[in-house]
Image 1: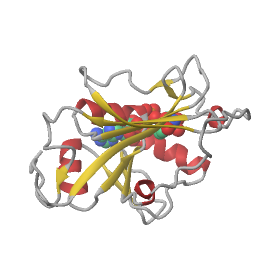
Image 2: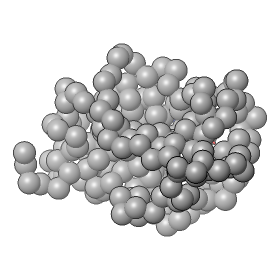
Image 3: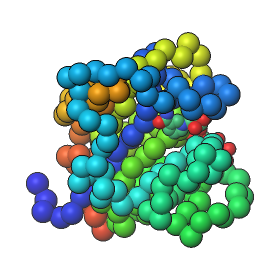
Length: 202
Ligand SMILES: NC(=O)c1ccc[n+]([C@@H]2O[C@H](COP(=O)([O-])OP(=O)(O)OC[C@H]3O[C@@H](n4cnc5c(N)ncnc54)[C@H](OP(=O)(O)O)[C@@H]3O)[C@@H](O)[C@H]2O)c1
């Protein structure tokens, strides 16, 4: 194993019990706590060091536009938005990209950032999964069935095995499942070597 610093891409999303990350009307009230208490759970909140140390967020254009409407949750952390359109720039921390995702990760993100969080939506998450660009998945399951909406995993490519790293149950009934990718067919170990991207051209 190299001692060079590595970058890790973590896919982080909140899903309903039936696998939807958004309702068709984009409403988010289903993510609110149901009000009952799961006694064995830990207190709400997720302020561990890893979360605090996020270096960069990556999101699809539709998630970006929805985040602007809801009130920007990403602070001043560098944020990369994927779009094929000319979207108005709203914040200094936001950069827009289009095109090849392997190149984006290998040439642009990995040399600059260690802890990269891909926060959706489904379309972009599925593209990353199909290309083997996700190292870790943190899936927060909300205690609700939506019945319809945007599927998290509808088009994620071929079978992939993931190793369960951690499970946290919260008092509000949400459960966070953390997984690490098992196979290493696309990239060495579970990350990318900084300043030495494996893919150097589109
Ligand atoms: N529950 C959760 O944790 C969670 C997380 C994130 C989002 N959401 C919700 O999910 C919904 C949006 O998800 P979504 O799957 O519909 O859309 P999305 O993944 O957020 O955005 C899709 C858009 O990203 C752009 N894009 C994707 N790949 C690209 C590439 N390689 N190059 C250039 N542009 C690329 C395209 O934008 P252009 O059309 O501009 O080209 C595409 O239409 C929203 O309601 C959001 O609030 C929920």
